[in-house]
Image (tube, rainbow, N blue to C red; front, side):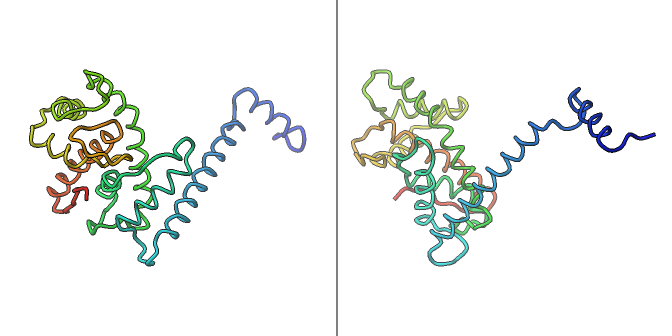
Length: 216
């Protein structure tokens, strides 16, 4: 006969203790992850509502930059992070599903995921800067930038014209806004964002969805 009442509960508990059933710790961990995800989605929703100042249910580039800047400042250790126009345009290039120069409300999670991926690349970019700053000058010239882009491009050659274009887009676009014909570490982060944006733009052009990535 099936065991009922307290005896059945104790037997079930013993079976769970021997590895049967769903471990309570896993349930608690999954619940915590879900709660964290919901809290993140609420924060994104609240920031979106704040920066959608024209109630369009979408953010244009200036609104998106303000959104990302405030979002970043809430992250641990990121309070001093300067969000560049190039980084915003990179996020826009990926998350602008409609191709209308805006990120729709329903695409903000993808926009934040794209931004997170770009942030994850920061340590890689810093390592590449150190590697290719062969004269320890604290900046990279056009030849060194071409070498960095080639490295990040999987070894595929980068033309002098492409390297020059990236230099022009990134020089003076860091926090110091120093336009001096070379690229420092903060400007390299902008340069990589510009480079990624250009690749995204070329892909969208191939798919008949135009994207402009020129930094103003």
